[in-house]
Amino acid sequence: MSDLRELYQEVILDHSRQPRNRGELSGDSCRSAEGHNPLCGDRVTVYVDVQDGMVRDVTFDGAGCAISTASASLMTEALKGKTVGEVQELFDEFHGLLTGDEASEGEALGKLQVLAGVREYPVRVKCATLAWHALKAAIEAGRQAEPVSTE
Ligand code: ZN
Image (cartoon, rainbow, N blue to C red):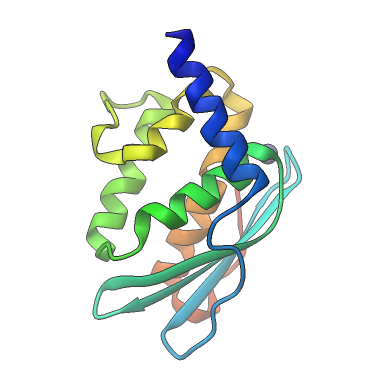
């Protein structure tokens, strides 16, 4: 298992050092929401371009710890081309994987499974789910989303 754990660590470090899809999106179909995790000080704004019920593009910006940055980066890679319904399913699955609330094996999550180790550190779960909460707020509330806080 330690090999797998090391591989997971490598992916997380890679994404935290070189985040993918970083930046802002603009356009009529773009929405955004800011997320704040006061426990850690993470701040992330997620931008999502939803057209015809499908995520055409998703980016993020902000500053946070390695886990929050890596999670946001991995999330943006995973969600492009997904429908809003599929995004909701992934959100639930990811949340289940991290909190152990449900018997989530995370198979549908692909690379996002690298964050499974976070569940051993409850404080870090909020770092890992921050971008997801912001994404959800952006999709649900539209362009005028209220900032979300993990508290
Ligand atoms: Zn954090």
